[in-house]
Length: 157
Length: 157
Image (cartoon, rainbow over all chains, first blue to last red; front, top):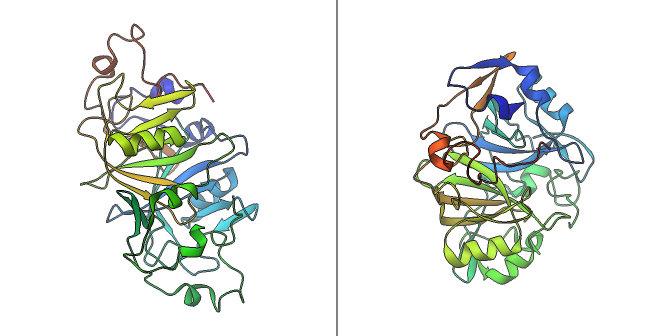
């Protein structure tokens, strides 16, 4: 269906339900969602949503993902306090990726860093590009003593 | 392995091979790669890489993805001429997503638009937010007459 309308001019409008029904979820019922800080353009993280997470995010304006490791909805910030507020939701041409423009005042990453992309390839090396804004122990309580954010509890693979 | 070093300070260096070996590819041997225009912060697209695509991209500086629909390497721009040049490659905390900072002078999207995220949810509707920079027929030749970009030849699911 998205293929049929991809050449429509700017400003063309469609029923939201029709567009959302055309999303291509993977075999697990999930779609990747890129979170970008709305005012700076910083790419914060990538996580996954199922239908329920997407519907909840649109209904509440608070970003909710689906945690693959926990196998349940993950309301971003439920452990860390670092809530993401939705400013705009975009769907790509193929309907298989979401772009979330969000407001994330604090760190998006479970390490306490502003964003999750802090390993940069540099020639034959890789370098850590950022320090935490907040110590992760402050985000989640004493290390190991409290329930971690789903990102830090992720399975080794 | 990334978990063991995630709290290292900014400037910490590691062997590239060691970091790349820690990447978590999915069951198909693929990892999602977000392409972001390096100077404007615009999120252009999301596609997938396998090991070979990643190695080639790092070796040549020209971004190469893996086309899931074609089942082979996809050197971005091979049909459209809209090559992506790598400016920086970042790996996220979990090692399961790549962020490519690229230079993409022309449209990234097979529709001729600057980026692929041109459907925006707006209340109960969705709106097309951009027009093509270049007519897709100019990008790929007369419609249907030439080999399309892998993005436009994608399977319905």
